[in-house]
Amino acid sequence: MEPFEYNSNPGRVIFGSGTLKKLPDEISRLNLSFPLLLSTPQQVEQAESLKEILNGKLAGLFSEATMHTPSHITDKALEYAKAQKADS
Image 1 (cartoon, rainbow, N blue to C red):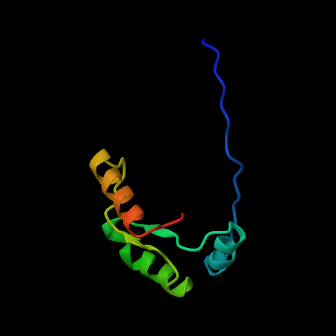
Image 2 (image 1 turned 135 degrees about the vertical axis):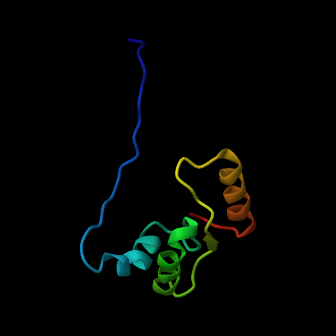
């Protein structure tokens, strides 16, 4: 086996009933202010509910995500994030 290095980012999991309501606090804890919500076309309604939890304080909603995302969709999402000035 060839030697390699792997550096993982520390993770944080918040789990349990009602934890979505803590999303604004988590965004503040990370010193962020304009998150971009990503959603598949089938899950737009769920993403819309997050807009309410965030009181509209978001960069936007990109609803074209797919499983095994093709690179052209990723490029489109990145362009949208930049145009909306998303910071997360």
